[in-house]
Amino acid sequence: MWEFGDSANGRIPACGSQATPHQGAATCHAIPFPHILRPQRLQSFTLWPNVHSGEPIALSRHASGTRQTKHAIVSGMSLTAKDRVALIRAKTERAKKHFRELELELISYRDKNMTVVAGERNPETGMIGGVQTFHKLPLLCFDALAVAGDVVHNLRSALDHLAYQLVLVGSPDVEPSRRVEFPIAKDAATYEADKRQKVKGMRADAVRSIDALQPYKGGCNGDALWRIHDLDNIDKHRALFTVGQDWLLEGDWIGFAPYWLKTSAPHFDGLFESDVEKNIQREISQALGDPEIIKRNALQPTLRELVNYVDYVVAGFEPLLS
Image 1 (cartoon, rainbow, N blue to C red):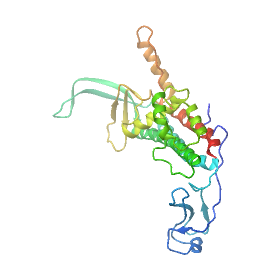
Image 2 (cartoon, one colour):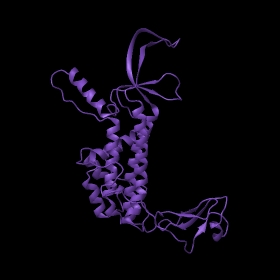
Image 3 (cartoon, rainbow, N blue to C red):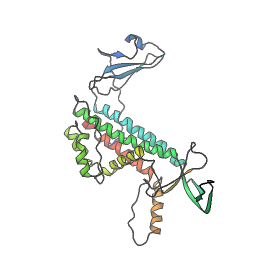
Image 4 (cartoon, rainbow, N blue to C red):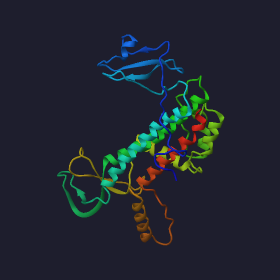
């Protein structure tokens, strides 16, 4: 089990490398360089050429009204493995921040429900008539589902940033292809067919390490990676996640009445693990004979495990980033 917020080898310390100006530096303001360190009302940046693309990149920031200079890690310059991990962890830490926000939303809606009336709506009057039925449904806010998508997206992004850094290490004098990404596929055959262009420029040992994860559906460690990839595509390109067949969703922008979201194939089975257990017991009691019960994952524990797993993967690749 991986500890939330820590790598497998312990918490990675923040980098504090100091950068110094060198010949060829320029500033984004037409003022002499020594004046940048004087108290000013503006904010200035010192720029150095990127060793890979030749484009200038921000190196240090001089805050308004102070003589202090803050230095930063420079992407593309000579970086240590820990530097590169720090750049990747910006995404995993963002995922954790979204996850904490999500947990607060979920806890506030735990066991919250509302009784609604269902019936046929008159197309002329808009009123519900005919035979009416009452339904007690769980309640959740739209924001929770949107934030859950943010968690997953930052995890997928962290994996892609890892792939990009592996290419920079493997081919330091070549601009990485726009097709570079962490390869994840629906099956082993698709993975092998599509992998080559996504890992182009990586060292052979880095590619072997990715292969060892079997990052495809059904792989020994690939199901978690496939779940991240699939959920990210769903949230980015299709729809919000669903957490049950019938849920009421509310938001301060939607009006007084909540939105009744119905689906026959939800992405998650409830918000917490206890919801899954209740649903399985209900399925067993309603089933005839001895059907196969497939245990689905609830939203909160599933996302927690995915966050921990990506943290573990990134930490494991640190030796290959030097």
